[in-house]
Length: 124
Image (cartoon, rainbow, N blue to C red):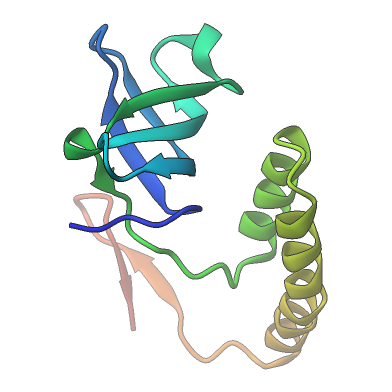
């Protein structure tokens, strides 16, 4: 599997810590990748760059960010990682998402949801 700079990945460090982050740089000849850690079971690693072996990486699924709340959370993440380009990209997506949310509130609700005896929701 080939990876690129800015891919979101999951890996285990040599100390066995599970980390989530994005690729900052790669050394293809050595098989070493430099990651910016955004989530880890070791809180001290969050926000720091670490190096891991490429063969231990697992690509995280790509998600669409149409929800205003998701976009706002990602903007916070972009601010905390000082990623200006990503911040600009996310703020550009925010206004259309807010407009879509406003338009969907203006439509009458067609479906009603009911809770069954197991506590699960069913749309009818």
